[in-house]
Image 1 (cartoon, rainbow, N blue to C red):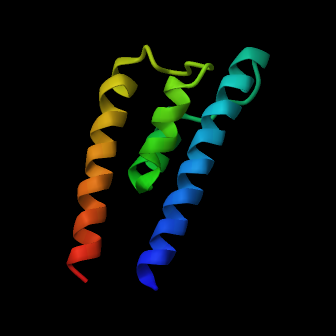
Image 2: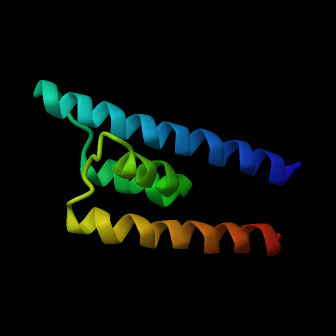
Length: 91
């Protein structure tokens, strides 16, 4: 039961993370209100790193050239996997 809830959470947080990247790219083109980089990293830390990474690699190619995203998001992906492993196996 807990695993199913966690999988659903992972799906929704990564979908939200990807949509945040799309929205931020749209806002950057329109010179609108942006999502802070700290917020994007917080979402990545909360198991949304895959969604952020996909947003970096998608045709929008958002924030992919920034060094802290280029290195930080893949590291957070690894941290997400390791944390998920320990959360699952140490209950």
